[in-house]
Length: 239
Image 1 (cartoon, helix red, strand yellow):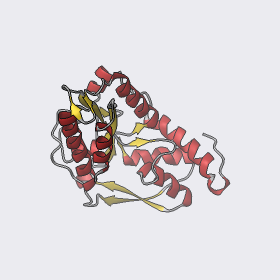
Image 2: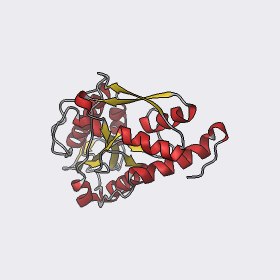
Image 3: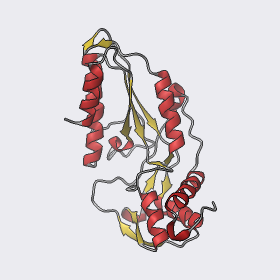
Image 4: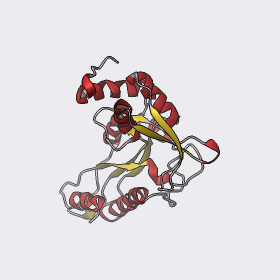
């Protein structure tokens, strides 16, 4: 059973049913060329299996809302970063590898197009989640039986400022005071996309969502945490 199915299945049987806020992803926009990405844009051309699972999650949410009256809000996160983040994200393993002197790959697309991401700091994401919870209405079902139409929403949570990965590396070099051993490589055909860029006007209007952390400020906080937590080569946090 898909993890979304399991969560919704448990919630539908509760009495009263809870309102649900769950994490979707900017990856649902797939090969969409129209920017910035808006919630009304097509999401039926995923570029990776991960994106397809998030698209499936949104379809499953629609089904449970329609059949069982669950109040559901999906939040499309745009490249979340910050302290206690995922070690498989580029900003995290770049930091680790730069400090170790290991080579890092900076990917580019055709014609030297630099891969860019709408990096969103964790504190801003949390504010968006709280905004979604604060504005969620009650589910209308009971024990799996729908009694009326229920709220179904989806919002972008991004920073609206796409930054080239090359600039990300430059900021990390300055914060870590270490020159990166980087090599520029063509973008691998692994289903990843060249850029992400969020239109957050809907979340701003309905959730009061206002991201305030630029990449320089967010990475400074992340690096301070990283150096304190991992203490690589005896380095102390001084940022």
